[in-house]
Length: 374
Image (cartoon, rainbow, N blue to C red; front, side):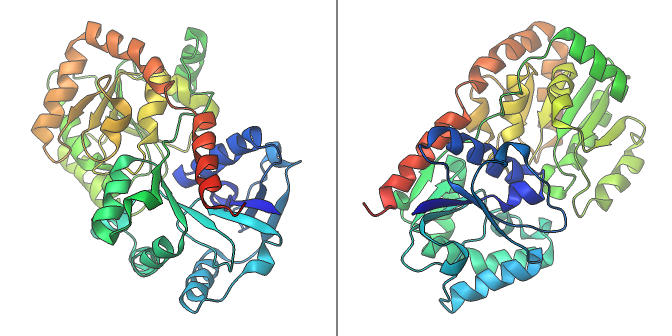
């Protein structure tokens, strides 16, 4: 009998869900007497993960969309997929896709309900699927893990999920997110030609990240800080045409630089080099870059919505993400005060250290024990 953990997101993606699945699975391996079996659907984008070479694995190879539809339809018609996970004692779905199983307890991690809260910011097909499938997945899972109290509140509010079925297990910055030496910051500055003074945003370019309002704030701040730039780390996501059009209208297209995907090894020095890290999002289920930035000694100015204040506490400074004037005032206050920036940078690593993947693994194992048969 074994515990299966679905790591499809880690194998097929570098984005947030992939980072979660990879970090949690690695921590679980370290905390368990016998490692879990890692289950995944291997798509054309799959990558090998070296640290799992000696860990039990079981994979299938089905296209991303067909696999999602198969699971949903199997849940609807109660068709069990037990043959895919022989000897399963428990199955943990680390993304929003719950394998239908008979007589096997299941756990599902719910990262957010963005599709429900911001349907206009979602791809239509993805919105349609999640809106139809998620209520069923949430009901069928024996236990639910959420990555923030904000997401727990959303589940209770929108689906009436019982409080005692949901456990909050916060994510953490990976161990390599720490204050880098000055020599590393100098090296990375040269590689990416980073300016002396810049705001940093990390995340996929999509409407929910609120980069258009951040660009409007940048345009206002540049009246006092003429050399100020915005550096964006992250790939283009969807519905981003309005963002680029707005840059042209504001005349700040030359002050906004898109670095695209950046290797994880370089991110700590980029965070550290930033004058201010800005998390402008309208909503984040976890808001992990807030922790990563603080761990690297970057002053963090953040949206006050959803999960961000849970992570930043009193170390970060917060603004209303819908109010460009307020955003500008708060960012400007931090830019104007080098002593405040130093205090925020110094307090960040200690705050980030309160969260760890070892702690997340132990709390996850406690959820497993609560629903497994003796």
